[in-house]
Length: 214
Ligand code: ADP
Image 1 (cartoon, protein in one colour):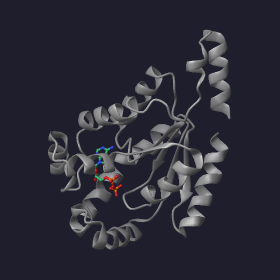
Image 2 (cartoon, protein in one colour; image 1 turned 90 degrees about the horizontal axis):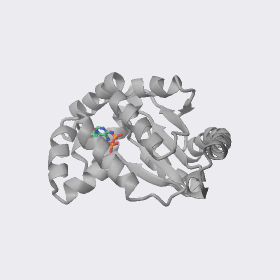
Image 3 (cartoon, rainbow, N blue to C red; image 1 turned 180 degrees about the vertical axis):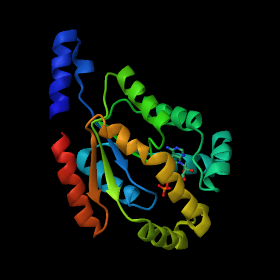
């Protein structure tokens, strides 16, 4: 609601035409690996009519197609490390640029570092848009390890089938990715939701928080 109002005011002062009047809903779905972002994103994209962009899925698509980008990403993913920022940021921007006619973006797995946050904010400004809010799913480390090992039985993902790689991903999350929450907290945009419960319960909690942002 506030975002829409600000965009409306902006349009009056800048005299911009209808095309830049579009107030999009751009959400960051945040949380550690295995916190349920992908599961919830599927419900949220439908409810809020958003384009779901998962950087992990984009990388796996590239890996599946054996592209140069995929081969590069794989080296890092298999070890539980982050793919370098310049590769990730470029891929994300391409995806957004290829899909301009949407009501908004639901970012899942991005941004994961402070340089990614800075790149996203600058990119949004260049498009006359803003990040509407970040919603973090809170799940403790032990629950995450159990969930990922279980997912690894069926997902076919190499990074889910090895406990050492899982623990590395959690460590990377705590060191490199958790500052993203504070980055958006400084902009009064970060919110947390309890990520333990049934799929429906968590979806309802997320919806309540997201509704308060619109
Ligand atoms: P999960 O959240 O369960 O770790 P993802 O599919 O989001 O699964 O990510 C899988 C892997 O893809 C990460 O461990 C990382 O190597 C890579 N990756 C995904 N998103 C990013 C990103 N924004 N920056 C760097 N690497 C990323």
